[in-house]
Length: 327
Image (tube, rainbow, N blue to C red; front, side, top):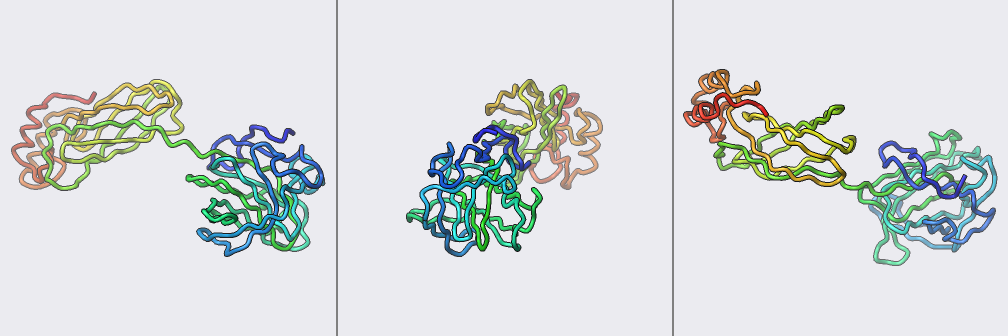
């Protein structure tokens, strides 16, 4: 197996693909720190209070790293990173990464031994690092589930420390994932017709539907009940590129539909929603008159203009839009 290949991820929450390292081209014994493309690997000792948010210090003892060619310790092939009980391993990345998986200690341990994997960032002080994430396990398992470490951070990290405590440890099958790209969006301005608002900070929640011939995605956006305003929705990661219909509906509004082409970029759409469909049956008609009559003088869904009460102005909206239907 090649030293660096493009491989399927072992951890479902992370990106689908990452760079995979199995250390098969490394020499038995010492290897220079930059031998593995894309990684800087050194060995030394980490010290400090090992909790997330704390800072630790790194004292390098080896300007490179050891590998061992023992098949019983490796998860693929015969090679694995190797440290004795007095050393830890630091892996530095050339830029921030979003996550890793790594396997540890396939061989049978002499006794249960705590081992830690830490994701860190550099501080302004040389040799000092801040712990962003930490996983600790006991190495008394020889199955893959018992030896897999997974770390994923949306903000990313640029340093990984593999800490041993009392026993020699082997490490293999490192997969490094990029920071996930921020979701693409559909955004713009949404006008809620015939609303005056009550001067408060109220939100109108509007449903959205993104449809193609083979898929449907749904969600909600919130805009000011006083006329509307800016909206934004994340394009679902599962939505393949292609042609879709984007439809908005909710409150007392008829739906409005827009054609969109998903192509991996952000999309801008200006949206305007017509008022008066109080019962949300898809048209402004007799049922909406009945809603205004039954709620007249009070508050409720028939307060189409969002002025705080159901009154004559709401009758006027229903009359003015009578017969209009969903788009």
